[in-house]
Length: 256
Image (cartoon, rainbow, N blue to C red; front, top):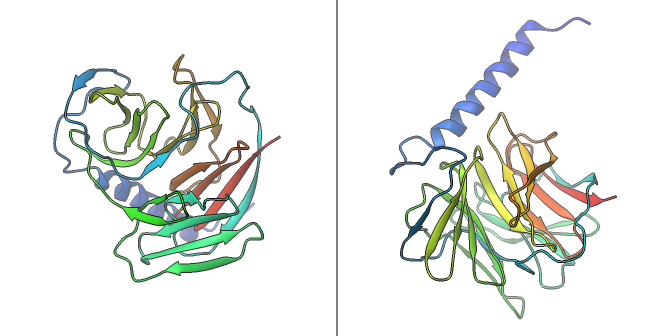
């Protein structure tokens, strides 16, 4: 097979630039990041982190989480989908586009409707009881770059620290525990079994990861087909949704 050297060179240059952009996003951050893989506990004033998603449960149940998933594309070519959230009935998926300043919905048939436009970088979205949608961007104290979070039923907040290479667990009393060993975690949710689901966008990882909060065991559920995995969502039937703003797609992983 013949390979066009000019085309390959352009692709390699593009990927190199993309990697540099990711690394540059974490340059200049303040504070000292503990070594990757380490766990430490400190006490600090509890503040609301960015992109908070309320999870259905906090502790593992007796049911078993699925081991295998099939994949299908939900949305493709719709600008750069970022954050994900369901409407109240789980009949439509909402996604934000940070760069175009829009929030759109996609129904079960794949039809996309722009709900709001002209927004200033919408990212964190929450659907309140009654169907009201709010989108926020708040700060978390003492974390390098909080970009996504989930709240369990016990009031613990799990925060994805993209430039700190870790997750943080913030207890209701304000105690923060660092869970290291990640590359660039960009979002986190809690599945119906109490496990953490994390998307890691570091170029050498690019994976959807599941972590048992009790044992600490981690497993990679998917690691192919991503360019920059961003938003993450799971429904009550273990269907997992991942947005990729550079590939311009939203993927659904269905248990099989």
